[in-house]
Length: 403
Image (tube, one colour):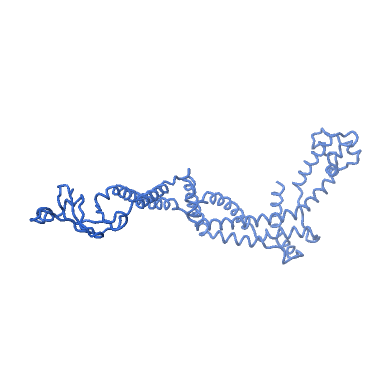
């Protein structure tokens, strides 16, 4: 299951609230340009409602108007304390210095009442938006950090290099074995064909359990098992008195005979009578003989290790980078962390036992080809000194190729 981007939504909501706060603030009308003037308080109520007289600084005339005086100002500024003779008080105020209301009294308390609620809402939205933004950023970073913990690109890279080395040595050994099989195939096939040419067709009756009549085949000129395989079921079915079913039985029996003969026929190598095909086989065998059983064991270990690493690398793929770990689901991260832990153990073991160096040396041994000895003379000389190893290895390769 993929993760829910909770903190991303919290951050988005916080930014939206900040944007709304900014919009409200910008929509609120600004204060006009003002000029401060002295006010003579003609009469005043306890709540500050008063009538004042002031001199218009623009028209230079006295004006009287209702006003909201500062009820909290010092009592000495209020009537009758301010002027005992006239019983008037004093306050200060502002008049508009621009526009159509130029010269009019401007009360900060009265004029600002309509905007106070809007500004207060803007401040509230701003505070909430900042709080959500901080929570979204900090929480998202903490969650992201917790999700990317375990990402280990270096372990993945080392494991891939080890997997490539393991797969390479297995491939080199397989290539050397295939070279032997390719050189062996025509020689083995020639021996089998020669032996099948010596087996009379009548022997197929025993192979078929006595349910095969071969007289008609012999009348048609088919003398040996090799002749049966050469002719094929369709051609044999055209012989008088044979028919399709008899022809198919004869070919099936001939193939079983050929398989049996192939299993027991062994290719020999005679140093006194070398010929090109035998030399090619000997040269191919020498690569494996020189590499020795250790190269075969190393190649087998490489094949098994490469298969194991391939599975672990598949599970550990999200750990190859922080972005992939962020995008991975919970189960994928769990498998990735477990795979990385196992990969680390395998890498430590490979380093302790110098497995990579063993793979590299085995590959070098298996890639030694016949370029330095195109005529195969040194291979024949080597064969004469340790022919048992050559024949043992040939039997092993031939057994696998025939099974």
